[in-house]
Length: 264
Length: 175
Image (tube, one colour):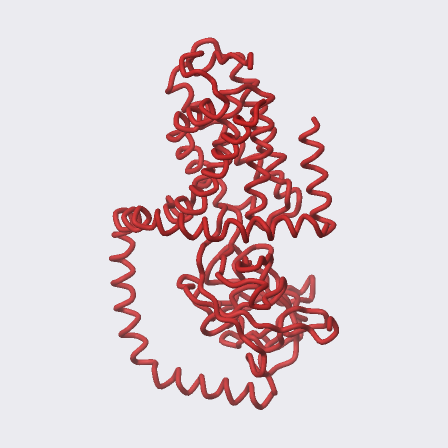
């Protein structure tokens, strides 16, 4: 009974953001970081052997698919270059600066999720590199997540695919704001909360809206709309969004050292 | 409980953390990794009784919570109860074997993982009750069942239980 009450007390304090608990977590992460890295190195041959033995079929299928995609993409190179130029011009025109003058901290991903019930990664930089909780994390084409916990030399990133991840978004170059939420899928998220009159179309790009008190810097590309659904009852539109960042190949990421103006 | 026992139990839990972080994060089955801390809670209840199972389950769960960003105390609560219930069940077992131990751990892991998902969902974690839960339960339970004899042996060593004090099941709690 005492232990149960202690656990419930801890849960309550954690929900209230009790400082010493976060300090304890941070200390454990810092202390265990080199041990965890050493353990990963020791066990990596086992992991490689396991994945090689049991994922070879997947690898062959992936290889075939990649060859097909190469053929397809080679035919789209010119169109993609034109689209990239158009996006850049659009961003400049609308004064949407992806990272602009915001300082970046590049970090290496050292670990995936440590449990079966979260979508997260750990990187090898932390508060020592001025990373703080709430900062946006990007890779390649766009947003991949935000910092949820940090120690001296480690930070945990909650990925966009996490079902508890939400971020305010807007349509690049058009009015209307909504919210993107993870769906447990590494390629697709769902955007909701757009007004029924918002002009949502497939292939439109959603970017972070940087709403008041949001930790997300405005203008970070999130994904492209693949389909739109209108609900006359709620007078809202929802959209399926394909993420721009490649969540399957996160080796190096960048943390935006962005602090909202009203929190300084 | 002597300092030596405390140190040994701590060593077992730290070893579990190393295995969880270093091995299970890399070796997955259908994208699902094992849960060594849940295994420890069950093994503690089976090998050492309900009270010690609850304590070790609490400590193991709290240790796991410290590595994650999920609510601190969630796994401490669930694994504490898992260790206690496993110990209670084991006191009713008069004849046992390695296979029965593995089956007990399999069922206990399934119930423990399900309970964790349910409590986590109630506390607002949207990643708990998903369509992957059944797969997670099966994989975690299978891995834990295979590793059960090892975990029970480790905890018996930590608590200085003689190897021949009792077969799996009729465990003496006199220490």
